[in-house]
Length: 283
Ligand code: AMP
Ligand code: MN
Ligand code: MN
Ligand code: MN
Image 1 (tube, rainbow, N blue to C red):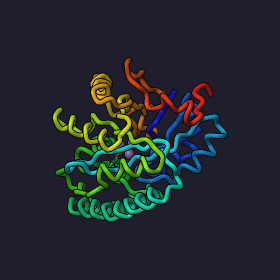
Image 2 (cartoon, rainbow, N blue to C red):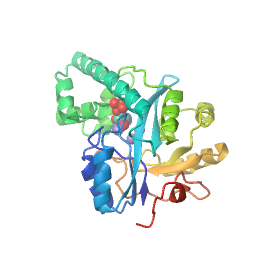
Image 3 (cartoon, helix red, strand yellow):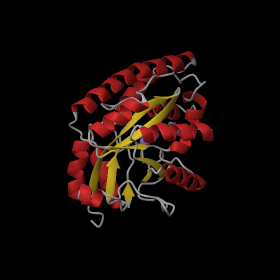
Image 4 (cartoon, protein in one colour):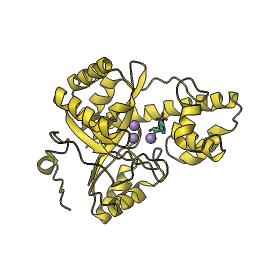
């Protein structure tokens, strides 16, 4: 099993990088990409655990991007965690995230929910602060029954805990990934709620910037979307990727190691890794 999208406590996952790798191994994952939001700090710990468990770790990241006033996510695979430009820009994003988290807390305060910044920070520990941390606080306090409904009621556009935020440009994110030796993958395209024309424009722009692949099988897509996005990939000559986007028990759309098959006729993003990167898929 190949899983190229997952999160640890470095961003909004529930398991430490080492525990995540251990769990992946137990669930039958042999090639795992750790792709924390805007942070690559977990990769060292994950790599050590990967050696212990016989998992092939792919160095990854999931970069937040603003494209036409929408937030989209670009996954970088096989990036170099020591690349200075990448480290520097991600540190900037994390700094801005902190300011954003304060504004989210202000918004929630106005809706009568106090102390959410401190509570979310306690969850985030030393990692970044995401809306997922706020969601967990609100579930604890019984504002909704699960993180999914909390998002709907409090954390999406038009709700008290939503703030407009300017993330990186698509061009910067793709360039950073490519210049650090990685491949850029458009994460969960089906989640952006784009009309077909806009989706075609996004894919065209992404490809012309040097984007390599799009996620087809992901916890964020329905089975009909697997087929739909496999077709988009073929249309644009893009490769395809797959990943659970695992965040932890109870807050994930797909269980680690339980991924449906990729539709036929796709070119996987890992196609050349066996030769180029010595990935042993049979371990
Ligand atoms: P942020 O990057 O701070 O905006 O946090 C976004 C994270 O929250 C995503 O990576 C998901 O893990 C989670 N998330 C976003 N939208 C939803 C949603 N509608 N339902 C559940 N989780 C969501
Ligand atoms: Mn997340
Ligand atoms: Mn994402
Ligand atoms: Mn993700």
